Structures are given as structure tokens and as C-alpha cells.
Image (cartoon, rainbow, N blue to C red; front, side, top):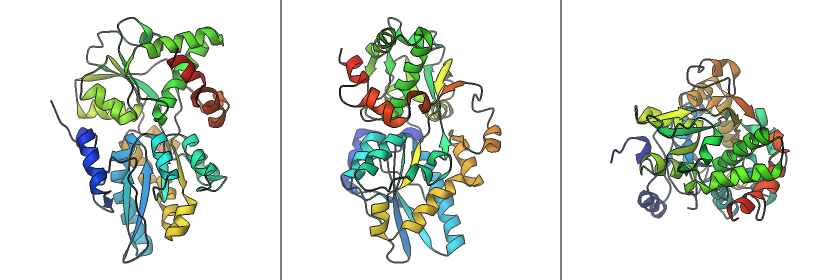
Length: 356
């Protein structure tokens, strides 16, 4: 089976286990990836180099490997201080739990605001974190698309095609994956538009969609691996950046389908206040997240298939992204706290649908 650069980076379970046993990898100007959602990490300001830890979600591996290099160069030029960044990746919900359980993250860069709120509720992040950086502390965005195999034999064009008999769907688990939560909400909003707010019909629709799900991995990258590497399923409900990366890595093997309605996905970032105060790393952690809004980082985000927040820079990627797609937002669901309560907490709508 073909093995390309993207899929070699800590995806296979055996590789992940070896990395957990071997510890995390620190990096300033070299590539870094850990594949570990649970390994304990350490950060310090001792010695000649400051080390900080970024606990992130699955599909950001390639972006942060590149970003760490330009940030380290920038920070040393500005301050004279060298810095190394340790990365940790996994399903966003799992990553949030790892921080709550003791992973020594200086910063978190997770798939949705609610995962950071969970860390805040444990007293590790100060209230008001979402206003600490611009654009709701979300320096780049994405959306949800479909990845299908070349030729699109099942003629998948929109959400209603995912409930057809014989269509096999791959999507991760909303209980552990932030991307999966965005997937679910985009499908729910489509059903809302189709059925005029009739909740019974909406539940039937989304239930039919999940009846067609044949594999539900714990994270978005695992779901991509299941579809791309393992050859399972007819369609992957995917982060736009994951789908575009697959097209780049496997030319001619897949097609991207943008549904008529999707969602503005806003991955969030925050300083883990309790940890940076203990580690003496607050200044570098703040600079690390602030620099994500710089022109250099915004271009880098676009090159890694994330949508830059800078509108002028986003326009330069108009050949990459469909900027005309109809996007709902988390505000259409009352914000993340309300959406989580309604859909994803134990016994809420997702459990009702999936366990029916």
C-alpha cells in the first residue's frame, strides 16, 4: 500500500504506541510530531533554551511542524532567546482531557472552544480566554466537506446522498473528536433547512446518516487514515484541510465535494495559565499564539489548507478554497456551551440518535 509523507507522520497505532513509550519530541527548527494524546509532557525555561508544549488536535500536525520553525526563528531574532516546541496530537476532546489529567501543556490549540472551556472549568485556564486573542481566539478557520474516491461512483453531492442505501460513510466520534462535532452540526443544520425545523424529521435524517457510518474513529486523522490508507468507505466527512491535503498527497485518487450547506469551523487557542505560571513560560506562550496572526503565519496556514483569518490573505487563496459556500456558524446553535449540552453530553441528541 502506498505510504506518503502525510500518512507516515505518527498515524499508525504501532507508531503512536512507540512514540508514547519513547516520550514526546521537542522541536524548534526541525519537524516535530508525537501522535500522543495521553503522554505527560514537560515545559521549562531552564538552560539556554525555553521549551513549551503545544497540545493540539489531529489534523494540525503538518501546520504546526512548519509553524514552529518560523516562530522559533522569529522569537530568537526578537528576543535573543532560543525556543523549542513539543507537539502532542490526538482527538480534540481526548487532548482536552489529557490536559485536565496532568499533561503539562503551555498552550492548547484545539478543534473547538468547548474543549478549552472544559479545561477552564477545572481551573487551569482563566475566564475570558476566548477574548484574549483576536477573532474569538481562533486564528484560522476551516469547514466541513466530503472526500470521495475518484469517479464518485455513488454520485455523492450533498448531505442527503449520505443516507442512501449502500453508501458507506466514515466520520470520527463526537465523543472524542472536535472535528466530528462540527460534522454532526453541519449535517443537523442541513436537516433543519430541509425540514423546516421539524425535529422529529431532523433526527430521522441524521439517524439515517449515522446508520450508514461503518467506522467511527476517535479522531479526524484516524478517520482520514481509515478512508485513504485502509480503503474503507465511499465518503469521508472531513475537515476541508484534511481533504485538500489528501488530494495533494494522492493526486487523481480522490475528489472533494463541497455540500450545499456547511459550517464555519473555528479551532480555538489558549494559554494554559496554571501551567505557564508554574513553568515560567507565559511570555513565550503568549508570543507563540499571538504570532499565529502575523502575515507569515497566516500565509503558512493557507498553504496548509486552513483558511486565514486575514481577509486579504484569504483572498489570495481563492483558487484553493470555495469562498462562496453557505456556512452556518456555532451561533446558530446558541454557542458551544449550548450546542454541547443539546447534542453531545451524555444522553443528549447524539446519544439518542446513535444508540436508538
